[in-house]
Amino acid sequence: MSMLPLLIEPAELQKHLHDPDLLIVDMCKHSQYQQVHIHGAVFLDYSYITAVNRPAMGLLPDEEQISKVLSAIGFTSNSHVVAYDEEGGGKAARLIWTLHALGHFKTSLLNGGLISWYKEKHPVTAESTRVTDVPCKVKYTNMNVIADVRYILGHLDDPKVALLDARSLGEYTGEKRYAERAGRIPGAKHFEWTEGMDPQHNYRLLPNDVLQKKLNTLGLTPDKEIIVYCQTHHRSAFSYFMLKQLGYEKVRGYPGSWSDWGNRLDTPIEI
Image (tube, rainbow, N blue to C red):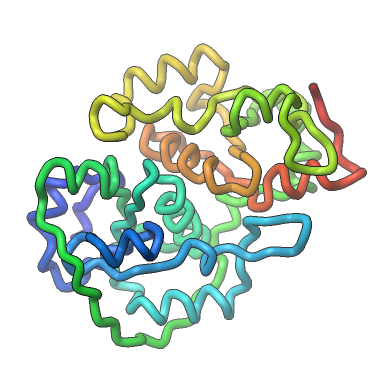
């Protein structure tokens, strides 16, 4: 189990479906889970792994809440979590980022998610997986994957730190506004999260060399610490995963993202 890669292919996952410490987590819509899912996968609603403090959305839930959520799906410190969803990986990657913040690194993202699994005719079921609660207490011990307003403000002029904006181009330029203020964090480079996906290959991540070339062009190079954000750290959770898969050592996600930054009066913006 310790040998499962961070990014796992459907055929490889199928070989491990009966491994005792494997925990497959389905982050699709519940209606989708009821229709079809991977055999043995437990359902987890995306909203359970985020918190809200309006107007900021997509915040980290407190330790008590996330402990209850993980207990309810049968998570233990021995679990190797394989997460997937039906949208290309944003929700599943947010779970993986959260687990990394908790210091749990036995994680994998299913490449292409349910789309690749189903289209490539791997076994599915509509039968819900029975779950036995396993009491667990978790703590956020790895703050190196988290960025907040204070941290970002302190590194805006740091040449060793770069910002990746995973939102749409309209949001990045300020043409579309989903907060009190429109625009972007000063200096942020635009790399919309879907640019990392390959629709021709069932929404898998693009090959590493293709991704790296795109990122290098933007100055988002592996020698820098990269802070990723979007509107709530949903889309940018996929960007976090993409960078970790490429071998970037220093990557932080900004929970709350633009719903936090764009609704404050003490943060600079760029348009």
